[in-house]
Image (tube, rainbow, N blue to C red; front, side, top):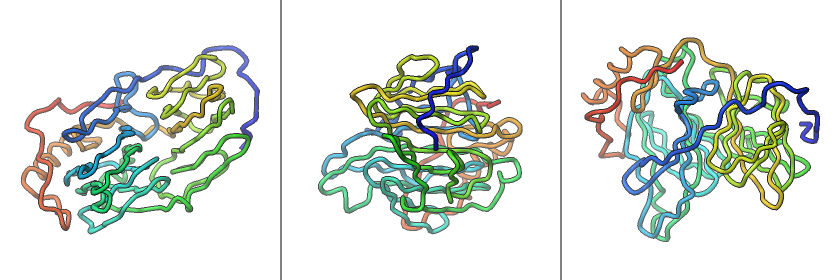
Length: 314
């Protein structure tokens, strides 16, 4: 990875097309997340249709995050943590704890239900939780595929580093590396840390690209404008970009994007599909208990009684 390049674009429009500011949403009672995608400024970035920042939050003694069983169709959920642990259970019978630097990739396809909770062993003394939950919409040919779950240890993921930069490739391809995580469309998703003052170029190999500032602040060249934590930078296709951590402060970024999917996508609650009718069917299936249950779970999140109409995504 040539992270020391100082070549600048030869004039023209800036590299940052738009900036999305996060907004707080309550995930469950007493636990808020910062919603990044979807946004009115951009519905999707490549196949990414949903992005939430969880924490950083300290869960006091006796307290934990409890997201009871809920359904998904037409997407893959991607859980990635910076701190803390989560226990995943799903209707395939999977039971898996995820820790920082690891990946839980759950492909819902035709339908799956899962829960995410703080592990019992961490509840007594309290714990931290800090991470990113994202959804990747599936190509048309895979929307009704059989559900799958995959876990990858941190040691399995490629790391490209040097000169104060460290990039862990979560999924897809970037900087000449490819993650072993199975994806169904061309994309990239990476966790990048920058020492104070270090510079990271972002390749133009992918059509749609975005940078989410998790911690610290960065300056983007050619804009030479500073962007703070909690901002998603939507980059102009083909624009050469240099990301520089602010002097005296390290930065942590999520790099994401890829090829846009064919056709439109619709989203309602936890359902994503190219067909509004398919979403209506999923709503009815969850209401009537037709999704396979999650073993060892005795509760579930009910279908919302009211909510927005199906949101249409270009």
